Length: 365
Ligand code: ADP
Image (cartoon, rainbow, N blue to C red; front, side, top):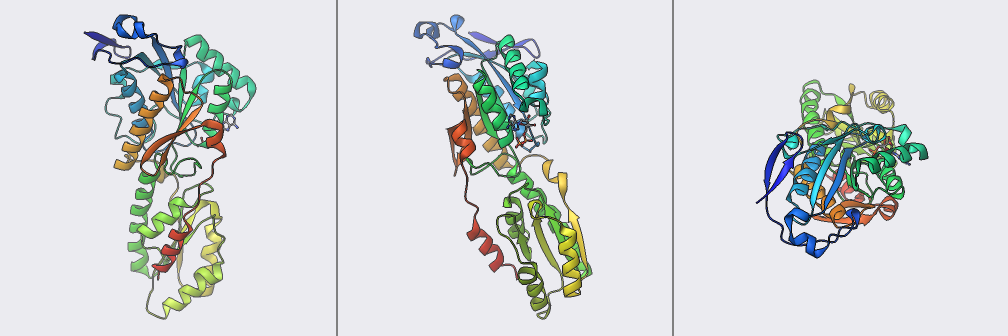
């Protein structure tokens, strides 16, 4: 019987006997003979960090990395958590994470490893410092959970000799290589619930509420929450709107049919909602209010979809590093987990669902 040392709590946890050998270039190949004997198994060290904007489900991804590492039977995998994204790498803050370090984290929002934006990491000196710290600690690979900015950092660190695997973690769903990003579903559900509340008061006062939702330069959250909350219009950065034609003329038309309250969902990438509000009030006579939902969309317990996607992607990241495949990004293609070479991933673009925008428009009146 082999025991896994839980370094966090200094308690051994039971680990199953090995079944198969896997070639792991990251940690140097595991010899077939070595793999047969549990005592002589290769040990590899993986660091994990969260970077950029936080997203619900990041903890689930970290948990999946720790648990999947523990489950490896071909190699011993030690996982180290890194505080505050790339800042922690530059400062050399590696904390051993045993199984109990991720207890009770699956359902929690935010990121327990904390996240940050790290300007120093955008310089060659910063990347070199981080790589040197990884070499000194014996780190064989890093899992980076974040957005495309974080993946650029992961590419640089890979080029500096530390193989990285990126996992898309952002509420904005704006990663070109992945149909889905961790946190997106939870954020949309949060926005939808908030807009439902706004609808109550819009209806009570016969008002037009203009709501700004997050998404950075992308309109995915806006489009989907507009449909899910029965909004009168969705404004997204991917399609320039004509406020007079697309909103004001339509409000004036349907006011004649008795409709008195309106919800307009605007993606943050579109611009100033106060100006839109002013125009609507002036040209329709309807009382207006603006609401910026803001960071409330970033928090909260992750949805089923986010927990499952985070778990699948964390598991794949460990598989990749243990089989010598650094410099990659894990992604979702439909319901399937896939992975791409990191430079290729950074070049990829995905199509905005303009057909869904048409659906939103057709059911909005
Ligand atoms: P996100 O990962 O959510 O897109 P950012 O774009 O803010 O968020 O990037 C997060 C961090 O990734 C930055 O603070 C920086 O440390 C690192 N990063 C971003 N762009 C680069 C780059 N071009 N080269 C190296 N590191 C980068």
